[in-house]
Amino acid sequence: MDKLVIEGGHPLQGEVTISGSKNAALPIIAATLLTDEKCVLRNIPNLRDTNTMLKLMESLGKVVEYKDNTVTITSSGKINPFADYNLVSTMRGTFCVLGPLLAKVGRAKVSLPGGCVIGIRPVDLHVKGLKKLGAKMDIAGGYVIAKANRLQGRRVYLGGVFGSSVLATANVLMAAVLAEGETVIEFAACEPEIEDLSCMLNKMGANIKGVGSARLIVTGVKELKGVNYKVIPDRIEAGTYILLNAATRGNITLKGAESAHLMALDDKLEEVGVQMIQEGDCIRCKQLRKLHPVSITTYPYPGFPTDLQAQFMSLMAMVEGVSVITDKVYPDRFIHIAELNRMGANIRREGTNAIVQGTKQLRGAPVMASDLRASAALVIAGLAARGTTEINRIYHLERGYEKLTEKLTALGAKITREKA
Image 1: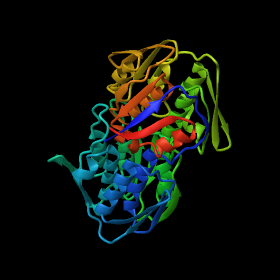
Image 2: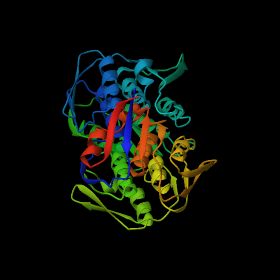
Image 3: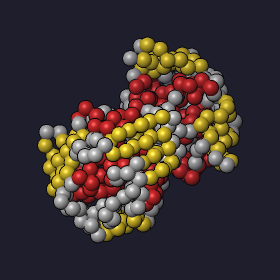
Image 4: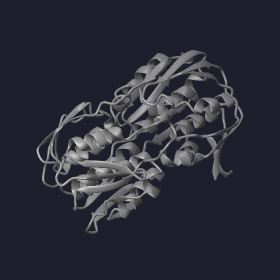
């Protein structure tokens, strides 16, 4: 198992290209199950998660070619509606094959999903939504088993305990495009990744209105055609580099990023003393000499993203003063606190809140990554800290950040990958 060794204290500068969105790519890849025609997907990041999804597609009967961030998916004939535990258990995003399999084949057996250990993430909204469309659903032996002769359009409400669900919205949306009649999805997730999926489905011949809103109106069609589609840039990767830039007092330009997808981060960074400036397809950051502590609460989009909570905490740990960080999406997503404290941070948890007493300087230390975004938070802390930081279990990073070590090295970071 490999580890990252980081020599901190070097301000980063230069230009970094933001990769395609992982969270948009996964359901978009799954959506190709809805057609027998050829689909060409561009700007697909080369990550452990996307490669797992492509392996799953092959196991379901699709023919997959992947080269230079472009995926070509064609049909080999009959679709296999069985999504095996060995693939689905490694990440939650693979679960979004359930909706398209049910719509296209009329049946599906999909393993309950896995992924990062960031708290309980049930599949009840997925099951509820697909049942509303007329599917018979059962959970047995660690699998969701679904059947439907022909899905029927209905009104579906997808509000959950912690708000809307991105994957549940994707599953119900993909099922609804081939259902008979009209489906109205209320409390749909508004994330850019769902908007991107909707745009691609419409390009394939679906009839979806209200794209980008919490109310999606879907008129079912008999079939979808092939598509050539480019995935949006990864807003979480962009946000991570922006926070990394602020923490190291760097001068980084982000190429291919979209600030409109990061309005909540932009708003909070203005309070901190960092200004995000969109120049064409680039984002440049300008910051004050002295930064200010700021409190945040994560919410579903367009609120502050839970996927940037850990990275923002790293920044606040190095800004003098008190910040309060609350996660309303995944209240247990605070495993990184202990590791940041090993580096000299002063953070304590009180229920769903993290109280951050900022300090001038963190110190390098051996730390352990617990999940994807916590790993990114430790990279930020290590780059800004004094001394050497060793980050173990970096396979989490490979799930969501394309060529991270290479990109950081090009920006002037002193970072190497070594055997643990």
